[in-house]
Amino acid sequence: MSIRTILFDLDGTLIDTNELIIASFTHTIAQYGDRDYTREEILDFIGPPLVESLAKINPDKVEEMVETYREHNVENHDRYVTAYEGVVETMHALKDEGFRLGIVTTKMKNTVHLGLELTNLDGLFETVVTLDDVTNAKPHPEPIMRALQELDTPASEALMVGDNTHDIDAGKNAGTKTAGVVWTVKGRNVLDDLSPDYMLDNMRDLLQITGR
Image (cartoon, rainbow, N blue to C red; front, side, top):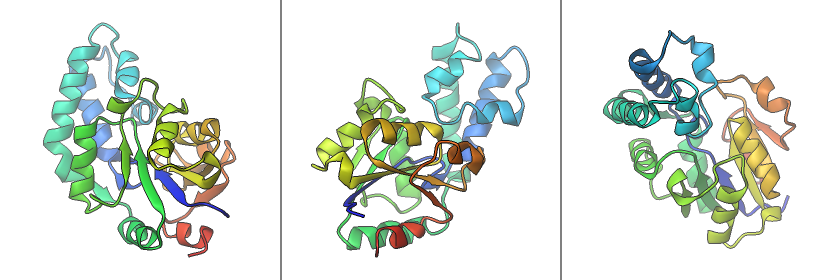
């Protein structure tokens, strides 16, 4: 496989922010929702841009909800967030082998760097494309195409790794190979149905896939 660039989603792929996200949605819904939401309903909000998800809860109070959500998210960030098992060592190994590494996320830039610093992943990625950097979020190909342009890599030599349907669809839309992760909070069947090129049981699987 002629892969020389690997792009990663962040939340739910490299770092475990699921409980933080769920807690922040729960906190926000308690103030602005018209009813309680189940955990399963909140899981559906994970992946799309925050504004898009919050608009489904209360379309008239989106700005206030974004502020409430982000305040809770930042204040509680370090209590919840950790890197998934095998991630940090795999990123170092891939970097040492000369792979170009990047992040493509629907998060805002400031919280992205909070997570990278906390989990000792800061400085390993040559490009970090956030929601601040694009007009169209995943599954639109724009964020991936921007990352590939910055890394001077054709899509045919890149792999997009993610835990959400938006990640797999964005990779396919951009023309990259795709890999899902079985630790997705939504259940691997959701990704299996999209037929990604690879499914990772552990991030270390990338070392075998790339022949390292």
